[in-house]
Amino acid sequence: MKILFYINIMSGGGAERVIANLANYMNDHGHSVTVVNTFPTDKEYPLISGVDHLYLENEKSTESRLIRNINLIKKLRRIIKAKNPDVAVSFMREPNWRLILSTFGLKVKKLVSQRVTPEHEDGRFPKSFILRYPLKKADGIVFQTDHARDYFDDSIKNHSRIILNPVKNGIYDISFSGERKNIVTAGRLSSIKNQLLLIDAFSKIANATDDNLLIYGEGDLRDMLQNRIEELNMKDRVFLMGNSSTLHDDIKSAKIFVLSSNLEGLPNALMEAMAIGLPCISTDCLGGGARMVIDDGKNGFIVPVKDVDAMAEKLSYVLSLSAEERDLIGTNARKSAESFKADVICKNWEDYMIELTK
Image (cartoon, rainbow, N blue to C red):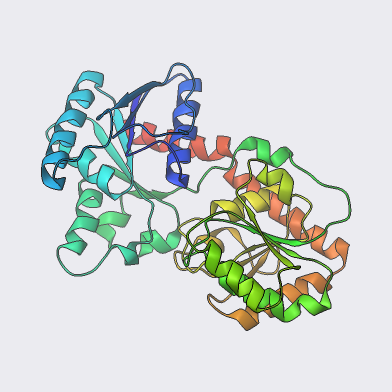
C-alpha cells in the first residue's frame, strides 16, 4: 500500500509525533510512505530511512493567506499525482482542507483526522462550514474520543473511527521499586493546562504532607505561576522544573501524577504517566479524553474541571492511601495503558487504511 501523510510541520506537538510514529511503523511493515510538510522547522520528529520526506515550501511563505493556500494546494496536488498513493492522510484543520481540495477528481482515498475539540472550532456559518466540509468529503475520519465523534451527525459519524494516540513502547519498560515521593505534572504552562488550579489545590493540603509539587514544562504563564507560588508562601514546596529531556525517568518515582487541564483532546502526558504505572488524578476536561482512559477509582481518579476544592480533596485522599493501595491503582493504570501501545494503535490505523482502500 502506498501512503501519503500531510501535516504543516513535523515538530512540537502531539499530532506531529503521531504522524512520525505512523510513518515509521508503516514503512517498517512494508508500505511505501511519503510524509509531506508545508515547510521545514527545527527539531523535527525523526523519520527512518526509507520514508520519503518532502516540503511544499523551503520556508514559511509571506504571501497573502489566499494566494499562499492556492499555491500550497497546487503543490500538494502535484505531489499526490506524482506519488499516486492508495490513501492520503492529513491531520489538523488547514491540512485537512488542503488535502480535500488538492485531491478533487483523483482516485486516492482521503483520510482526515479531527484532533481538536469540535466545540472550539464550531459556530455559525462560515465556522460550521469550515469545520464540517473536509469531514463530509473525506472517505474516512479518525477521531480521538467518543465526545468528539458524538458531536457530529450520522453523515460524519458513519464513516469514522475512534483511534487513541500511541504511546511509545519504550515508556512501558520504565519502572520504579523504591519509596515514592512527590506529586508531579507535565505540560505547557498555559491557561488551558491550568497548573494554577493544581498550585492552589496543593497549597490547601501542603501542611498535611511532606511531598512537594513538581511542575514540568515551559510556557507563557511561567512568571504568573511563580508569582502565585510566592503569594501562597509555597516557594519551598512548589517548583517549576522547566522542560526535561528525561521527563519519564524524572517522574517515575512520583506518588501521584496530576493533569489539571480545562480542555484536552486526548492527553498524551496522562497516558504516558499511566503507562509508567503512576497513580493519576485528572480533571474531567472538555474533550472527553481523560474519561476515555481513566475508570474513576480503579485505574485513576477524575475530578471536576476548575474545582480547586475537589482537586485538593482528591490529592489528600490519594496521599492518605497506603503504598500498596496506590501501587494497585498504578498497576491497573499500566494494564489499561496496554491498549494504547504504539504497535497496537499503529495497527489500528493500518487496518483502517486497508479497509478504506478495499
